[in-house]
Length: 384
Length: 80
Image (cartoon, rainbow over all chains, first blue to last red; front, top):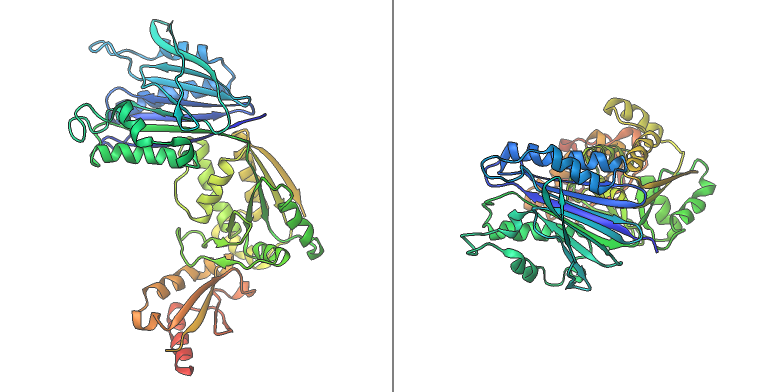
């Protein structure tokens, strides 16, 4: 059975530092997902540079299908060591999960990653290796659907040291507050956010160190079906809506006001539109029974493209709930996306698109597709 | 006290032409006036070239500004 790794990253910077001295990257290929986490020595700009260099070198090599051992040795060989303290300028943890559930973990000078299965901590057997003079711990194990993994930097483990706790939160404290990580949180995002909030609370909102979390949840691959735009021939309304509902396990997204009205009429459900403008750049979302997300069309798709473009460059997708961010997050976390695109065109939008320099619907979708394919998400386009 | 229904179009064209400002106006309205209206957002009022569109008690109004919206609401309340 094919499995997918849903990954979420969260971080807070040390108090009064503009940049976080930790860096994290997620590299997805068609058959695996790799999470890279690095903690730069110290904090601030210098630490950020070292951590970013580490994760960028690692992710660049991994994208070129270089084996993890060579990635580690390249980084160990490349990155300097502090002559005074004898410490490497950055730590490194790499977790690679293949779509058959097999996982490889390499850790250099980081808190050990945690694996939870049915809410119980599962010990990971590690062996120590010397790679280019650095002591690296290595593990190989298998993951099942429902398993949860947590990787943190030492800012989390030492959260609250000297204040809330004498010796900091510690792994025991972290395990205590996590409770039942597999069943309490249904998404990796919720777990990552909880862990960072916990660390921040331990520091009493004055973080004494940068804190980063990578949460991973193993699940079945997720398909998202997106219907946008009315069909050229209204006689095809039923056909396109049927295609939207073709896969009972897929998430269903509707982008467009007229599109939503078509779906509403065909499935016989009422649309209720939110009165809240969570982001003034995009119209509010709507609620339609049996549809997971209902947004406006062109403006939302254009804004979604901007968010995904930042995500491709390594920025985290914000946690906001407006239509564009919710759409971006839904697409970004999918393994397969099917776009059902109606070719009908609203003449009233033509002048607006020129005025606002917006890409027309089909062009915006084509740009989004290119970004999704960079993340190895399978995309299918069907036109009506 | 009579309550009138005010429907704002949340469609693309109306949003670009200023529907958000109308939404903000309705939220910041004086409480005594706010109590007399029920605000709903609707997907599309089918008049995209003349936005922003508002429908009050079933009557469609086009190219509505914030000042005009206030006048229209007061007009409809006075009619009730």
